[in-house]
Image (cartoon, rainbow, N blue to C red):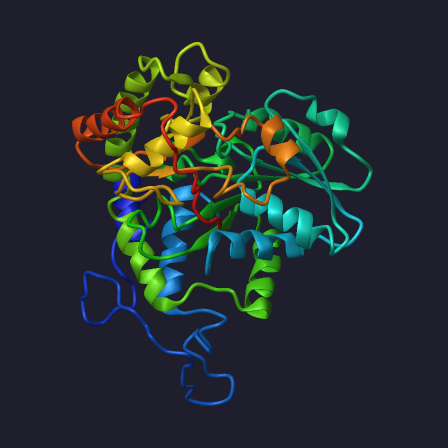
Amino acid sequence: MEFQFATKCIYGNREKLAGEPTGAISFPIYQTATYAHQGVGESTGFDYSRLQNPTRQQLEKVVASLEKGCDALAFSSGMAAITALMEIFKPGDHLITDADLYGGSIRLFNNISEKNGITFSHINCSRENVESFVQKNTKAIFIETPTNPMMNVVDIRKMSEIAKKYNLLLIVDNTFLSPYFQNPLELGADIVVHSGTKFLGGHNDTLSGFVVTNSQEISEKLRFIIKTVGSGLAPMDSWLILRGIKTLPLRMEKSQENAKAIVEFLLNEPRVKKVYYPGIKGTDGYEICRKQARGFGSMITFEVESKELACHILKHTRLIPFAESLGGVETLLTYPCTQTHADVPEDVRLANGITDSVLRLSAGIEDKEDLIADLRQAVNSYKPGAAADENGGQHG
């Protein structure tokens, strides 16, 4: 029996919690490092929690069901997930990646993966001829859609066609839309990655990451990697993400509703120069996003008239926290140039449009009128020429 999405968020694709003898509705936290055996060759299916843990296994089954993959692996963070994923490649391999990625991914590729002998072509996958960058040693295409933070929409089906033509893997970071709004595997991707810290967890209270695939061969490689490098998600964190996923559909709908209202406000605010949101009709990517996703999400990037105004807004919102992250029940404002993308070279950052007057907003589930009122008073309280606080925060 195939369940609908909201039901899968609670049960995965199973009617009952198989093997749970107590009848517990909330899946138990198996806080154990190791498991007893009755004899040689006699195992319960669990040997050591670095390999697998019942709570993590339940979470992985739920996420695999939501993304319609054959397997999902839960890691200690989104970056741990991508780091482990890069271990399927070897020195001499080449990857094509979008230039506008989360800064942590760019930092990993430039400082760790390149050190390990992997090379990259960082391009605008929504505008450039991706096929022209394929080399003899190219092994994969790595994209986000929408991208972080400039909200570029990449055509997943088109990337899949190119990947299949050249026998490449297509990897899609689906963090911004979550499996509620978008399922890249159904559109031709081979691997999906998530920062589960964000929308899947949804409460800004724990870190996690996921790699999901529809390939049994890739699954086996990743299972070997996760038990070898030891970056699997801990039981308590697995339980927190399981709990967060139960309300994913409700949170995604409310956050998107709030985002659309905030976008309308920003579009009519004279001191806002540009608003980047895939749900704005007539903008680049709108039709592609509408065709490959079931919604536009709750992430908004906008550029104001000056750096001074950007810093003033961050300091003077009364409700919305100035904090790095996204996807939680709380609306958050982030300053990409000193936070998420601080380690991206300035010329690359500016080429992507990430100036010092750009802000990123993750809409939460508060009352939209309160959020708009807070943004309005923060903008209106700014007086050009007044001393500005330029503390952009720390970066991750």
